[in-house]
Image 1 (tube, helix red, strand yellow):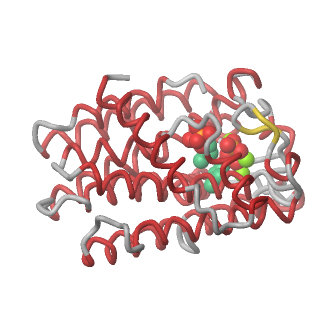
Image 2 (tube, helix red, strand yellow):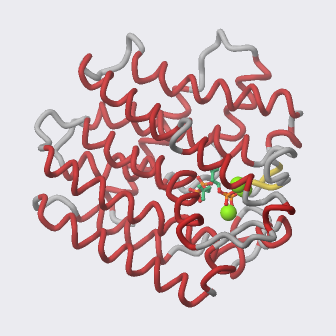
Amino acid sequence: LNSYLIDSQARIEHALDQSLSNSDVPERLRDAMRYSTLAAGKRIRALLVYAAGFATCAPVKQLDVVACALECIHSYSLIHDDLPSMDDDDLRRGQATSHIQFDEATAILSGDALLTLAFELINGSASPLSDRQCRLISHKLAICAGQVGMVGGQMLDILATQPVLHENILDRNALEEIHRRKTGALINASVVCGALCSETVSETDLASLSYYANNIGLAFQVMDDVLDVESDTQQLGKQAGADNALGKSTYPELLGLNASKQLAQTLCQDAIDCISSIGDNTQHLVELAALVVNRTH
Ligand code: IPE
Ligand code: IPE
Ligand code: MG
Ligand code: MG
Ligand code: MG
């Protein structure tokens, strides 16, 4: 990572620590929220916020709040994704999952609280965002995280995992739809909300950034599927081979490993080509697109 992205990583760690320090929260709930969120995540969504903000000349104070909100929503999604009734995983970010470390009720509640905290941060009295930015960003987050976005995608993913339905192998369009919703939507929100922190971003540039984000969002989940097959538990910090064990529909299962990796490369190259029109400050977005396809965990 270049120095801007390393600085951004330090900023998000600090901002998350601060945001999860409310002494009015029941201690066990706060402990569980901190346990999952402050663990060793890659912070890709936060970095996308900062990189999109950099590309559109947004003030960094605004970006801190939005990056925090994105990582809180993402962290909630992982806690719930790992629950016994969902993917039933016991390892996440190199440590026991929340429902193992605490218990199911605490895991569910800490996810709920992280989701609502995201909106508290955006709209709270300490928020540096203008009223207009609060409204646009809150709305974008709600759409991308919710029923037609990530939660909708998680529903489709679960339906595609039912053994009885799994006999009808998903076609490529159906799998793409799941991946775009369950993972792509929040990645889209990261980039677009970062850009919405700018007072001057044009509709045309927002459209290019959104296209970039949709491409790398799909590529991100394709590579998540690939790494589940090719990488190991130590490297991933989560159980390798989990998709196959659960009978998940994945890109490697549908297209094979090589075609999946090729697809991710093509998507990211298209993403990079598309943002070349928006000015001279896109280098961090370019670097993150490359990271999405070349990552090892
Ligand atoms: C994992 O996301 C879940 C998906 C949406 C694929 P990340 O790979 O970004 O997980 P962390 O944040 O680094 O733990
Ligand atoms: C997760 O997809 C998507 C989310 C919204 C959390 P996965 O179920 O493949 O994510 P991992 O592999 O458990 O991180
Ligand atoms: Mg899942
Ligand atoms: Mg999972
Ligand atoms: Mg996965």
